Length: 386
Image (cartoon, rainbow, N blue to C red; front, top):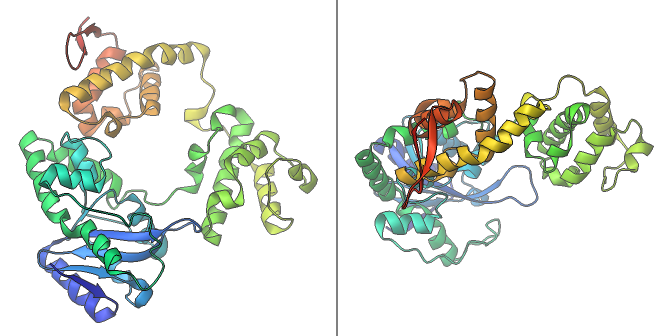
């Protein structure tokens, strides 16, 4: 298919009508995200069964109708690793997402490996090999070259066929329901596409150094930084870098002079610095539950049991041919050990497809109902009744 270049309302309306008529399309974006809080959407690529187009907002094409399509649950959107794309639409237009099929995620469930690039996913599913050389281009510059337009078009040219191939493979493996469940969790109408300011502290490097009131101060300061960066549309690190934020939470300065003694703080005197100082002064309440100081016995239990739980997870995932990072992180395993040790059973690993794949096996291990044995071949470790 030749690539259409759409720069106006009428051309976009015709393309989106075809997508809605077919009930599905492939979609991708090109953006720049170095100097802003929200990704700057510079190009949107859309493919249907019969059409392949690049939609250019910098030459007059509106993107609100595309955002509405992303949120339309009656149209399936084949996308590859769409997190940043969906965040861009959410931040610029306040829209959510629905009926998104992530080919990268599907490839992980299909046993092709976790976090596959588009090129590797297409090669493994369709035998298609792309020749890409524009990955670091500045998509905000115009005019676009013919090479850039071809590169952008290739990002969606084969996605519908790849989605069909992956669905067939998943259904044959009996894992299509698992993939659907995870995609709904990540990209469905209830998904959190934009960082929740009150949870921003969890992404601050070095947070593990803080305890008690210091951690409470970090939660408040990180939320302030997130909201202020979003308001000004600048990267959060341009306001306050992580090491400086950690030190502010540790010291909790009360005056401008005390704040100026914190290394790396570059906020000028005025409303911003005053606002941050107020937030630090007023930070109150209990430390976040997951980060609260644990009793020494429980800390030791987690330290000893974590390698065993990780071994079970790796073995189960290897046997199923599913990338373990799709199932659980180290933090997930630590919190599961804590929940079970405290007599609970409410945890993400004990729900849905995760429980079917690994949760029950992990639960039996943690309850002392199974022991581990070494196997001569893959997956090398397995459980047996205790």
